[in-house]
Image (tube, rainbow, N blue to C red; front, side, top):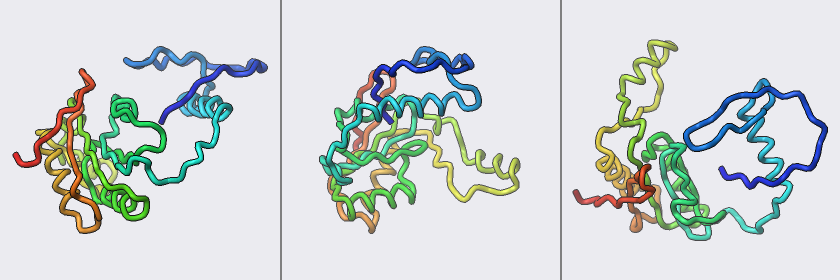
Length: 200
């Protein structure tokens, strides 16, 4: 999600609560309302964004006819990293960027209803799934009394998991276009993509 910030018009000051919300990438956001500071920040940012927003006049079909499947990791700024503009692609993200049944569902809709042809898969270095196992599901079952119906999809070898994801896309009977499917690992330290050879 991307926000365009502009200066607010003068307004009557409201009571605020100061919350320290610094991260490694951003300075403290300053005062925010009590009761939901992070979401309040996002809503206020949207109001500033909408003040200058103009309908781009495009439909839902991606201009570049490409779908990007990537990890949900907060360090991945996909549009900037890939030189993409609004409307260029479909972006499908989940924990690990793995190709699950729901990713296939989204890709099928993307291709068959909205005209995409290419698929780029992006995992990354230092992924949290490398430190998990399927024990995560068992621990959840112990805590809540019900085992999750989904797999964790943890992995130890990021390159091999990219290969598996490419294979899942290329062999899906629901996808119309499987000839242009490529997989990469994004280095969170350098910002560079490293392409994975599917044949190894």
